[in-house]
Image 1: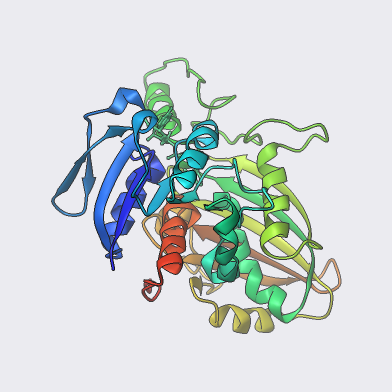
Image 2: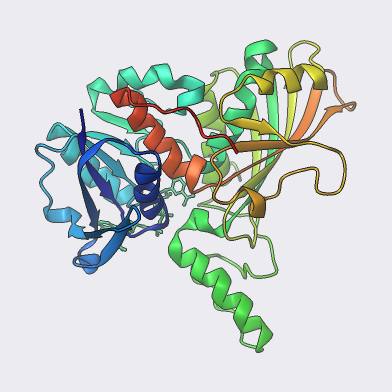
Length: 342
Ligand SMILES: NC(=O)c1ccc[n+]([C@@H]2O[C@H](COP(=O)([O-])OP(=O)(O)OC[C@H]3O[C@@H](n4cnc5c(N)ncnc54)[C@H](OP(=O)(O)O)[C@@H]3O)[C@@H](O)[C@H]2O)c1
């Protein structure tokens, strides 16, 4: 059995990674089409070692006869075109925020709640969570299974690739410009990102939180447990690829650091690297290009009852987006390979 697969947003950060991962994991495709905006029509994108696909226009593309569409063209574009693909009989796996909280759309991380994929039938759409949520719930799930999590405090250190290819260019150009005394131009970010950190991702909400912080809370509840309380502070940092998170968890009952390590040892897709020594932890630079979610700096938090602190990093373009979407496609088609070891 092989599948006709459309990659929507194929010229972007996530779309290019999706094409690469489909090839790396030998997803059984009979045909692949690369779709993007009108301005990219005719551009070439790589597929596999030697493959080249000519980009076609999403707006005029007919999804009839296509099996799966992996969407990452931004929320507004998905809002218009994902339902069009879905009603043509193509199952949509959407990376944008648009459908995530729709009660008729499952929000899926295969290792955490893969069983919910079956609930896509109503709309023919499956949503991929936010990149920061994915790596967080991967780390929380095995702990929550052992000792219920009551509350999570998380601070993120999110790379610029999470903001798309133009955001990566802005960090590059500002960094280079500062060395030759150019005044930084802020177009993709609200303030200078080179040699700085910005506690503001997505728009502000009425309660003072940003929408990125709200997404982490509501998505974690939808995926893991509606009773978990979560407070996030989301920060953009001048790193190209790889999101990091400092996480503090409060459990309902006593749960030791050793209990946590044992729980993570059994979790597919999570690796603990924690030697309490120079280089004995993982940073974003090392996780770029990797499939696993890495946990480091694990320690009990003596300031509260049943508290645990740790550090989580993952490649936001892979597990945080493209890999998770392709894994959903694998579950959907029952073609799932073993998760690659580090
Ligand atoms: N980057 C991450 O870590 C991450 C993680 C999870 C989810 N996401 C979500 O995934 C989406 C894409 O992110 P990205 O980082 O890949 O952004 P990106 O690098 O800016 O790429 C955007 C892609 O969307 C296409 N596009 C834009 N407008 C379009 C239109 N009107 N019709 C068809 N295609 C259009 C672009 O095509 P052109 O080149 O033709 O403009 C490009 O292929 C966003 O919604 C983002 O929130 C990103």
